[in-house]
Length: 376
Figure (cartoon, rainbow, N blue to C red):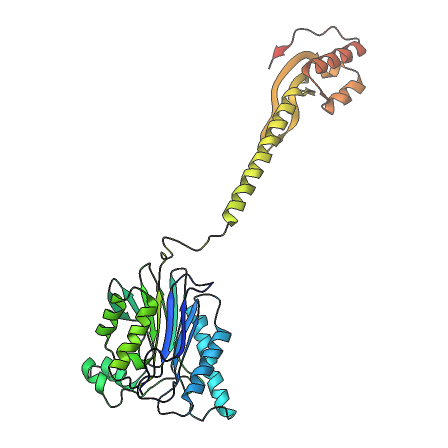
């Protein structure tokens, strides 16, 4: 009896702890193969489909090894270049296994890997397993097949209808295990709420055309039911190959509406700026109060003693002297000791104290009493 879609080689469904998206991952042996050479991975935010090359020995070994290596080397975030490096590691693992006698010489696999999170999807792909985007009921193929028929189709030598039945449609031009310097395609797209992503092996796309795939994805609201319906459609069309399908629904807004959590560095900078401003303000206020209450004696250019409010000196070209009164006392009339004291610009707690000290200087010099001071 031919296998049905309920006889799955591997399946996964649901919403994992790190996943923001409902998904379903299903694979089936098909109706004409005895062995399933497809391997799939559903470890959110990482998803992948690997198809062991048809016609090659140990395809199931190659695909399983590719999936295991991808899982061990995958980046932590959706980054296409980093994901490509993980796929290249899978390629090297297959080559090394073949050299070591694991599996069979010439074994290979396709791989389409996807990481999706925070409104961004990164894809790394080699072979003819595909990634699709369903947006607004329109289905778009995101990847390009690496096959003889796909190259002929892109060059215009055959039509899409001819490609589906071409005898060389299964001939792959690029695959894991074929070249140590393998080139892996990479893609990055923004995903939006309501988008649906599909990863699948050619066991689906060789049996079911894009229009039918779009109809199924549009008609099934649940990703699990959609994945099962796709496998059923491939088997109902003949099931000539193993078939795998991973359906992922995007149910959060993209990065424009809901960006990643921003760094709080700006908040710390703002707090430090405010703190520094508060400290400078307090220092300025304190200095202002202090200098407005302090007085000092000095000698003007004309040799007259002055009583000054503030303190001698400047800060950033701003004078710290706020008022100056020229007295009728000549510095030369004072005794030498007091003249020396005046040159030091003595300070006092108030102008009254400064005035009293000047009176004492005058008395010590037997000078006449202070006359009325005149403003400068």
